[in-house]
Image 1 (cartoon, rainbow, N blue to C red):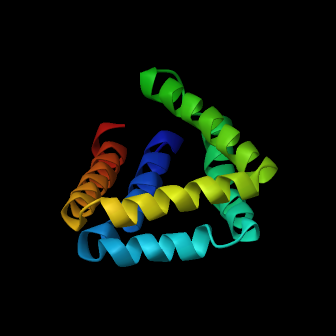
Image 2 (tube, rainbow, N blue to C red):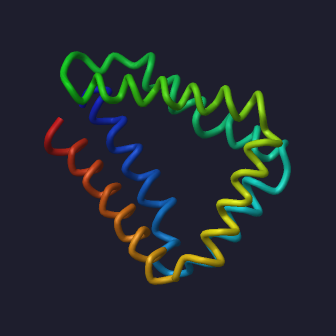
Length: 136
């Protein structure tokens, strides 16, 4: 198994586990995410240290070889490093904007739409696991 397949499987599991709660309890999942990540600038910085930084570094440093998927993953790694830099530099701004977005979604978007997004996220995670096991 090469690095690309291992990374696809790991990201598929991460996406599947993080999006599955939206199917069963969409409002509670949004409130939990808001409380755990956006409550304080320190929690937002911790999120930045533990999610986009390691994933971005893995995407930039692991030898994925050549090909279109490897180039897409490299570009996504640079995007995650940009997200990490913004989270570390402007946590209060990101917190205010993120809280406004979470409040808008919680008050304006129907639970059925959130459940549909959860199903879509689970499907994307399952496809990534499939790609990691059988295609790559």
